[in-house]
Image (cartoon, rainbow, N blue to C red; front, side, top):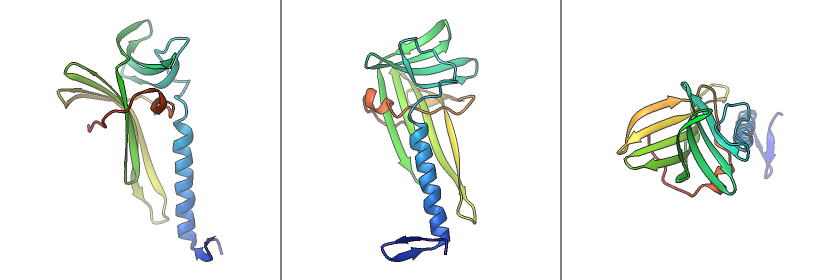
Length: 172
């Protein structure tokens, strides 16, 4: 048999496989977005919780929460080159995935940290092969001047949406 019964109708094993895959991926995305990876190096202070942190080249970018506020940091431990509390949060869904962003704007520059999931293909067995990515994009007057991938996968905490004000999704 190998199917799921819904409303008196049997759903075949292919559809069952698709439903199980979708549920598994959805639960992985929801669970993985709950907290930033504590094993990642961070610029957060002792009283702050990482909402996002990753290494980009020799630098670290972190978004941290503490006392009901979020702060963006860029630099190395002991020497923060930039910090800001003027943050915005955005997310955008698309077929086969989505992207979450935290943005900082300072004069003509925008600094966007992102966490995205993209469907790369469907195999003949119905498996979705997702690709996960995260990084930092720097734009000047709306044009990308730098795009750096995190050295290991990083996720934006689901808590960020409750702490950071909503903003516009930035194409990059």
